[in-house]
Image (tube, rainbow, N blue to C red; front, top):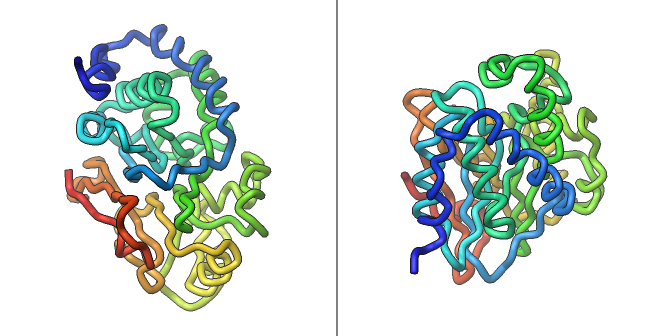
Length: 276
């Protein structure tokens, strides 16, 4: 009997036609609506967090081959398209695998999935789709979840923490709102302060005081995020881990982070970093 990772690779997603890829979008949209904006992760399984892949389909294939297994749940932290050599193939493979393993793989929204909210650059994938196809893709990806929460007080998202009163409020964050922009576009800086840059260049930047206040309010031990390939891996007393899993930026190392059910967790340092 073949394992599930092998089955997931029966049809090479990068070779699917544009029409075949579009046929993935309607069922994916239904699934994203059903699962909501905040994913609740199981405590009894190994959680595999994956940073930006940005068209690096090879990185996604390696992750799926290694970790699409019983007892594992994979969480991709956003930015699946643009920059890299095979955005269409990467996205199709992820959607195909999501549909075949809906509870074993979760795709969070990054800023590069938010074409429906506001244009951005670089956007080679989106611009290559053209005006007829881009809206169909944009509508589906606008339904992606914003964050995933683990009972051991770990939150995963793409950028920065939203200014919400509770985790449940993430379900009500609106696409294009200020809190949505924090989640998908927000940067961190290891400096004192709250809002260091409100986002005059499109990327709001937040400091230590903001992180401490929001993470304390939400009761978090660790934040898992991606978005900034050149920021220090650990910030804010090792409570914030930035992860990157793409070769799209040249020298960046492909890494994933594992949260194992048997390991105690006090900070992001207690997650296991693995190079691909």
